[in-house]
Length: 497
Image 1 (cartoon, rainbow, N blue to C red):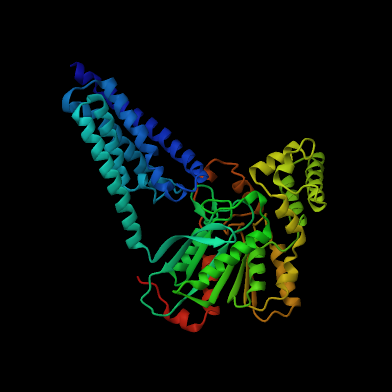
Image 2 (cartoon, helix red, strand yellow):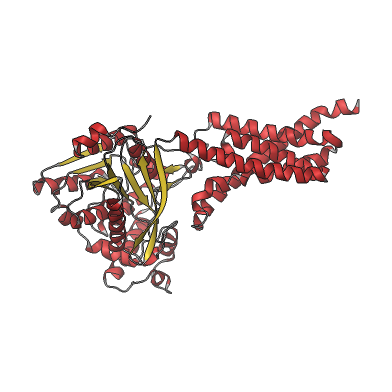
């Protein structure tokens, strides 16, 4: 009778324990994932490492519940296994109804679900002890290795392109990069695309949030459709060497040029058919490289900054002030702070990043901003010096400029400046396209204000959501590339199905 009466209590313990374990495990996963960006050694294995985010708490939960229920013998595994099945069920429910749950992390795959259940079994073994614990540990290690291997193999077999992590020399540093090459039965050499990121500490994927990568999505799409692509970590970021805080726009242009030369050297790539894609400030870098390499087959400018600094930053901060509904005094203080910084950089009073933090040099608010999103003095000085429109005026290769009407960082007015410059230069082959309701990452957003709130993470959900690129943008890029590449490429290069 006692056993029957306490059965509902046990079920309540299983459900509550499974829910709490899942809740704290997922929080651990999401908190640990961005922290792993710090180490270049583990950055490419983050998805595998955070698989332990639910394994460890599941083991502990299985052990604690076994202690509470206190079954003996084989019955001791009923409580932890129940916990494991509850957690697996919650994962399935969340993947079904929450779009921001990742599809490719090991712990969220079918193999991972089984791994969670085995982890709960091991937790029960901690209570039973003896040989069972040793056997359980062996089972866990073997299964985890098998699960990771099967997940990797499944991805490789289903992919329509091959991906290579490589290292590229640039001056005295090495740049970490990813090359993607279509799986094709054609003997023709492939057209290539170099992706060049914008300002800030950008990795090769242009990661934002937890599950979004603008360049990763573009590279995947283009390689699935016949183009070899290469993208790389900015110097001082991810697997790339160098000091980001001591680098300027000309350093980043030299790095892009090194990656361009590497792509030309690949035997599977036609060196006469390489296109540059620059996003935001990467558009300026791509323009610089194109000016030194007239053999570039074409240039795509995505939300490219046309203005010089500090005009661009002043415009952005005016928008931020309005979006935050700052008072007149707050707005004035913001712009004066920005103007003072620009003036000191221009006069070379600030030459090193550490100069920002000298006593009584700049406001505390500005120092906090520079700690969160550093713009080193050398970068700012060169951004004030460099004139994008003068360089663009001299280019002759085909050019495509794309932007979004909801982009508050680089509004369509910047794209119109590019268009005006190309028109006045009588450029022989250019096209401009402004998409309605798209933001800086070419995601559908109703207005610049909503884009600002999303990028500022006003809602914690924004951190976990997936924001895919608007498909017509990808189609536009692909169609333009196919049109500008030699006809033999667009007609004959078809990825394997």
